[in-house]
Length: 107
Image (tube, rainbow, N blue to C red; front, top):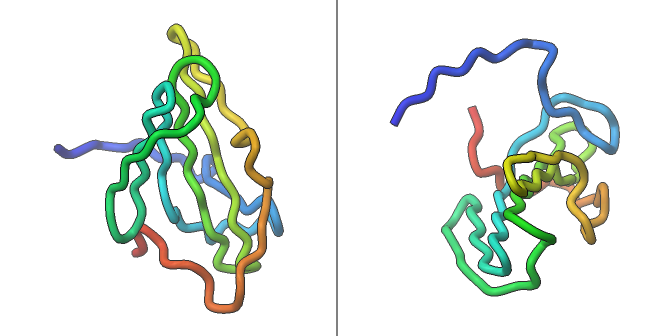
């Protein structure tokens, strides 16, 4: 399956810690009514958790190459409406040790 993206240079993820734009995805977490699927650099993992509100939520964790912070970008889908913002219950920015974390994809 191939996708053809029309990506504008003004639309990109920036770090919530330092506003840098060298951010890499670490993991994706999907919560569908308490059925959670997580994808990271090693595997796909399923578990049961507390539902994240009504509908389905998707949280993408990013790591900043510049300040080594991690942060989430979240989407909540309910009845045809898509909300975006911060992942509830997850700290906005957290610092990691020198060397960073393994990214899912890197070019």
